[in-house]
Amino acid sequence: MKRLILAAAGLGAVIGMGFYMNRAETPAVSAAETVAESTPEQTIEYPVALTPDPSLNPVGRGEPGGRREPVKAATASPVPSAATDLQMLFDQAIETLVSSQAGFEQKQAAWKRLKERGKLDQAIIQLEQRATNDPQKAENAAALGQAYLKKAGMIDDVREKAILAMKADQTLEAALSLDSSNWEARYTKAVGMSYWPTQLNKGQEVIEQFQTLIQQQETQAPQPQFARPYAWLGDQYQKAGHADYAALVWQRGAALFPDNQELKNKLASAP
Image (tube, rainbow, N blue to C red; front, side, top):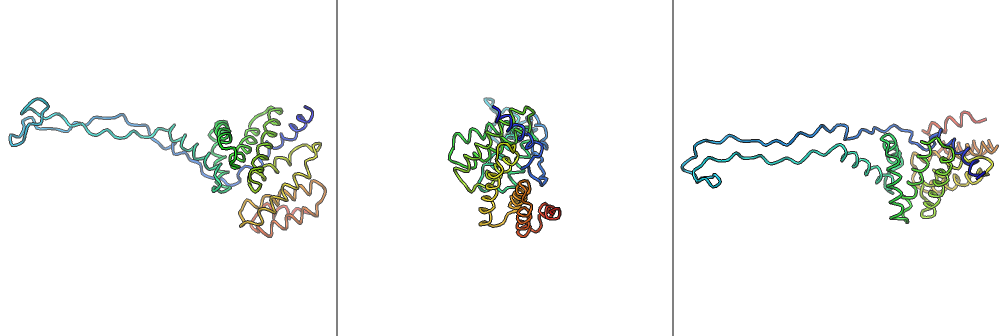
């Protein structure tokens, strides 16, 4: 229990930082916000002649030679409700989070929409169900681990924060056991662990997680989010008292991502 409380104290910092939230603002206007109220169904009666045309056969129902009955217009399909649209957007966000084809920024935008619409708890339930139904899919566990950490950032109870953070760490580790190259899982795990109390001696493990992540991503085509691990790894070296290593890591990152402003700022402030 003492270790749990220590963990809670450090993990509280994770919440304030919002360490892995998206940095780019993505428009998130719900289609439901523009749907007008449905119009009650109307029956349209077309005018008909009072006297039937003798050259035509009678068309009245059971009344030979009688007048024609008004013709009812076909009923139009009902307009989708706002609730239906919101559910559709929620389902699309979940599919994006567990997709191996969706990009990092797409997933960050999906997380942002879920939080803004107060759907994070519902997302956790949905992701837990997916992880249970398909436990061999690393993307399910990776998304669920991120959801736990995001939820921890929205509660005040320190003990609950610690429990959720450790649950997230275990879930992200499960994702990595299924796919050791899952970028979101390793990045989120490393960043989360970087806020654990120093008494728990996680510093070296955090450095190793970022080192592994950088080694893996340098074998792939560069993507904008790949600049982030260089910034974080440099910070960990600096925290450990290795300012020279920190500067080397930032220089490496800046060489690969010359347009990244965060790395430029870190290099400018390096001793």
